[in-house]
Amino acid sequence: MSRRSALAALAAVSALVLSACGGSSDDSADATSGAAAGDGAFPVTIPNAFGETTIDSAPERIVVIGYTDVDPLLALGVQPVAFQEFVTFPDAAVPGLGPWAEDLAGDAEMELFPVSATPSVEEVLALQPDLVVAVSSGIEQEEYDQLSALVPVLARPEGSTAYLVDRDEATLTIGQAVGKADQAQELVDAVDQDFADAREANPSFAGQSVVVALPATDGSGGYSAYVEGDTRTQFFQDLGFELAPGIADLDAEGGFFVTVSPEQVQLLDADLVVVLALTSIEETRGTLEADPVFATVPAVQAGRIIYVDPLSGGGALSYNDVLSVPFALDQLVPQVQEALGS
Image (tube, rainbow, N blue to C red; front, top):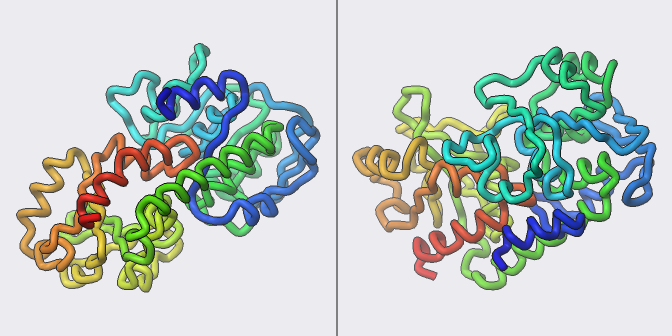
């Protein structure tokens, strides 16, 4: 049985096990401790960046406005009535879901908030939710106050940054909110084990530097590189890699990527360069292979570079959650092994 098929079967009987995005499970458990002592314990009160969320009973109509929060819910056997699209998958069997999550969607129809336009407060409330999940969103105090005046809002944890909530924290927080804290911990532990197995099988990854980049989309002719805390960088750090010092030293000003000008291109040098394709691998590779500036990067000259499909592999990296990690490992580890000759 494949990993995805196994997950689907486990979810059906509410006995899933999996997880991942930076941080230890012990730290995450402390961050999400609230009134609930275990699975199914309500009411539960969970602190967040804007106050605290009290959920009196198991929610039945959940609206998701966090970009990747639908996956942990589905992994826990909970289907929302609506969710926010993050990556557009044109051939998706279930609109808005990555291929790693499709098997877990139930028969009930879920409304999709397209990535091109996040929902307004009015649109969210029109769905009559009894819980709004906004852990991996950019929600701020004003919107939180408007929503939470009428419905519990599960916002990002205290001390976290918008869009950069640790994978384990997100999973455990969501699990606590739906009365499945123990199952959420099992998900976290299982994905941690997936990474541990991958590291053990590939000891040469340990301590090697990595840069995850793509051509800049602002017309500058430069490049964008993901920073510490971003899901894409964290995935490779969980495999044992370290973020290249040149990128680690740049100030992202609270964001998740930095812009590297053509004059700074040597900052992209690392033991491994991972390029996320924009529209297709062929187009992005063609653009960069024709770029004489990019060609001066030693890692590029040595062939220590992989190009990642923007939908399946790139989408799984961007989500970096309890469902997408096993999929990403299957897709990307062989490519990394080949690029590094290991």
